[in-house]
Every structure is written in structure tokens, then in C-alpha cells.
Image (tube, rainbow, N blue to C red; front, side, top):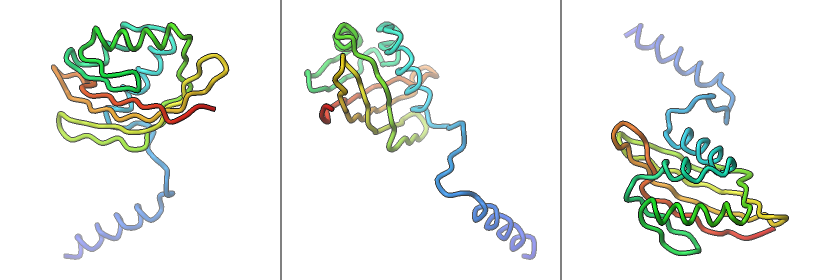
Length: 145
């Protein structure tokens, strides 16, 4: 019993001593790496690498319509790249995972010329063949600045 009390005291002190809002540098959430890879590939204008982040039968819903499968999603990505679009930020609000499913929500900031497009997203990921892939992606316009 004394050992249990000491363990609880140590745990409580450790939790109390941590600064609120500080997050570890590495995250077990699959959305973290996927988000960074999406941003890198999109800004490198590498549509093939962006589309490789999606499952073969993924669905993407945007203001421009519903795109099913990698071929249609590639057209959506290419359309943005052809406009000269650049992603300034993908800012997550929530990222959670459990086993083979995960989701992430947040905001985006995309620049086309001098216009900043603000967006909101929801992605659902699934672990397929040992790799996390986007299976559902909702990307909606939230205004311009």
C-alpha cells in the first residue's frame, strides 16, 4: 500500500510540474507525418506524391465536387497546382487514432497569387498494408483574405 501511495505521489508531482499546453516533439498520431508529407509534396508541386497519400478507393469532397479514387483526386490536386496554389499551413485542431483508424480536423491557408484562401478539413485515415492512407477527405473553403 505504501508503494502505491508513493507511486501516486510521484505521478501527481510529475503531472503538476509539466507546463500546460506543452506537447512532446514527436507524436504517435498518424496525421502528423501525413500532414507534413502532404504539405511538402504539394508545395513541391509533386501531384504523384500527394495522391500516393490516398487509398486507391479514397473519396475527396470539396467545394469543387466529389472525387472518387486516385485518378479523380489527382485531377483535383493538379487543378490547384496549375493555379499556382501554394499551401502556407495545415493547422490541426484535433488528431486521434485507434488501432487501424484515425482522423484529423483543422484549418488550411493556401495562397493563389495574392489571394489567401482559408479552408477547413476533415480527413479519415486507415492503416492499409502497414501504411496510413487517407480514405475520406473533406476540404471546404472558409473564406478569402
